[in-house]
Length: 319
Ligand code: SF4
Image (cartoon, rainbow, N blue to C red):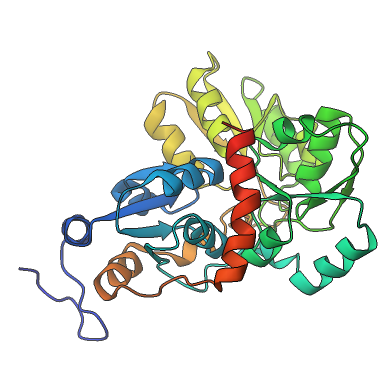
């Protein structure tokens, strides 16, 4: 029995964490949370991961309900893989500037001008863009996937131009890039990063490939969110300057607590290294979504089927 804290909408229990655990059992639900979620959401999740890890988890779960603590395109991805499961997103407004930077009508026109190109799209895109793609990739497997494509095959890479540039540098391939980017990863200031490196000469810089080349050129290690987490855990170094969304610092601190993690500084004096979309999800909204079984993610079946094919190719090519 729970005591209500407020009278509006769904009443909130005093012990939200216990109530969420109870609802998980009642609904046979699994809570999947991205590393960029606030720490209290990460702590109630059954699985915490980056895009690839969460896609794999969504593909293999036997739960009836998937509660996706992340942004809209991620919950769509879970629905693409699980058409018969109820997929819930705590806040439907949790979008993504990168996904929004690739409107489907403009991308269709771009693709039509380059009919001989294979389309590889980063998973941070809408279901409509996935449905227009040949292969999906994540920041963990983008290099590996591009390397498997015959050298003579021209490739469109969408929507993140920074990840695309990084893949070009790693593979030596010439990719035709869509001009999209993430507001969070474009926020870091090179000048402030250099100042920080001078103040902390003992620290290594680790960066996500969605960052601009001006930041990546200072990085000792570049990798997906999971790769950054593993690197900071396994490295003998004791201090790191971390150039990605600051939510990952919670897991870094949990997995290697004795070390020092310094968030890379944004250009402005702001919390711009926190994704404003990810932070729309709260523990309260997570509870309410489970209690009300809403908001639910739905997709037109023809879009879902078309988007599934390139997702499956990714899972096969990165197995
Ligand atoms: S951090 Fe960037 S890419 Fe990730 S969800 Fe937020 S806006 Fe999108």
